[in-house]
Image (cartoon, rainbow over all chains, first blue to last red; front, side, top):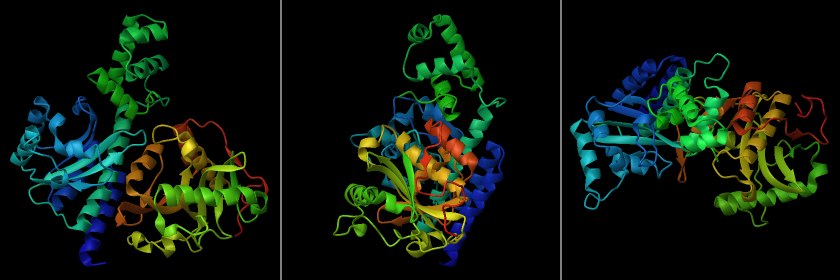
Length: 249
Length: 213
């Protein structure tokens, strides 16, 4: 191994050891941000990658995007036309952003999204898809002006990404779960939310559970509050990630 | 039923073992395209399928529907002999309490929808039960890098031994994974498996006696 290869490997392994000791998402963000900037990345994002038309904001785990970029991205729902996200949903292997091919003539909005990223200093990027045990896709994506794309550097980023994502999930579960007896939601709240996750309406859930629609809505609202979710969709996502409910089917 | 087969009781499972190596050919050579391990006799067997190998087999009606292989890290094994460069940062683990885990599979007819199939879960739980009974405290091996989040989701601890490397078209990672009672309980909870699954027919029933030291 050359000295450079040892440095990349050491950087990755040191960072993974640091993640182990981190107790808050701020600590992880700071550790990850420092390490990535040494590799030439000034922005990163760890997030779930749902299928459109689901919106991505509810799935964010660690947001290291430039201020302002996210605002416009979400306002204009650029996720739907983000070619990096589209490529991620079809890949298991890491890739440079330039490998996420799209045809700007048939998909001009994709070019618009990439132009916005470029405007915010995210000119070249690297993305590591994450396939969860439940089949969901997530990713760790990072970008900068001229990141280090040495093959050994990319291997280091690949490994760092896998562990950064795992740590982010672990911390989110700890944040979301005020674990006293191991469960945050009551049995009925979890049951109601599971039916919602299966696509049932409140009315249908009421019928299934033998309660009023009003009670169903209260269960779901209480669950959402415990899970720090603003919407039903986000409550479902947070509940699944916190393993409070299982994906139906 | 999950049965552990070693050199000590393999004479009781001759038919099942013959079937097992044919099933391995179907899975690894035919389905996964590992042409490098193809043999003219239609059995998938390599130099590590020797008297030190331990097989965790899912058996139904004398047929093998799932399996995993364990090889002592103190003897020649895949990571140590063929892929030591994958462990270039932390080194190849060699310890009587560490076994290399390879060749995990479930036959097509037993695969449920979704990735965390319950059948695979029973094979893994059977393997963990055996390891805990016999004092195996960690599993080493080479995994597809994209599997790492799945292990984390199951609640396992995974220590990388080197950076991920491309082998053929696959990004693979050498790892060592400490295992204990908590690992077994988390794996059971993850797959909704409520009971012990392992049988030790033909082996000394006392824990700690199945392995030759």
